[in-house]
Length: 86
Image (cartoon, rainbow, N blue to C red):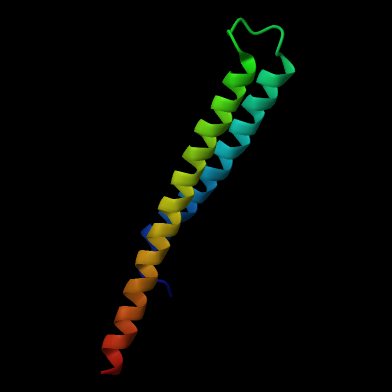
């Protein structure tokens, strides 16, 4: 049985959210590029690249937070095992 099930759940939720944000980012990029001549923005290519960079950064941060939680849980588990052996 895993200890701290809430932290495992939060980590899973963050990973799911990261995937959703990645899909939304790609969808927005495709929409921007598909409607390149209908957008009133000064430069829709730069807008699309900005969406990719911003969304990609957000995905990276969410995934890193999820993995950070798992690393902390692994450290706690290994520390507990080491302490029990002594």
